[in-house]
Image (tube, rainbow, N blue to C red; front, side):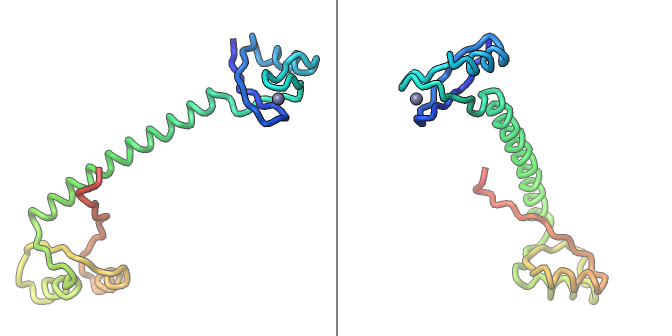
Length: 138
Ligand SMILES: [Zn+2]
């Protein structure tokens, strides 16, 4: 048995069971499949339920993957916060002073624009851009 969601010319949708998809086609050609609301035979199949189900499965998988990635990034953020010094907006300045003055070997983190980041990289200063995950997000 196979269930189809049918739509009528009148705009109503309803479900109907058939033994196979070819049975539906045959009955439809003979105009035996009729709308339960207006008795019209101008009915056709709408999107089948199984295809909707597989689509939603894909969404679920993606969400789980996103959650895993978020968790890893959150762990990474915690690691950085624990081991590095937050210099906020002074990141570019501080990164240069570490590189040129070699005052400290402590890692730092902070904010920099993509332009500032690429400038630092051009100067041979090792920086990495990390997606900063908001802790309040789940
Ligand atoms: Zn109808």
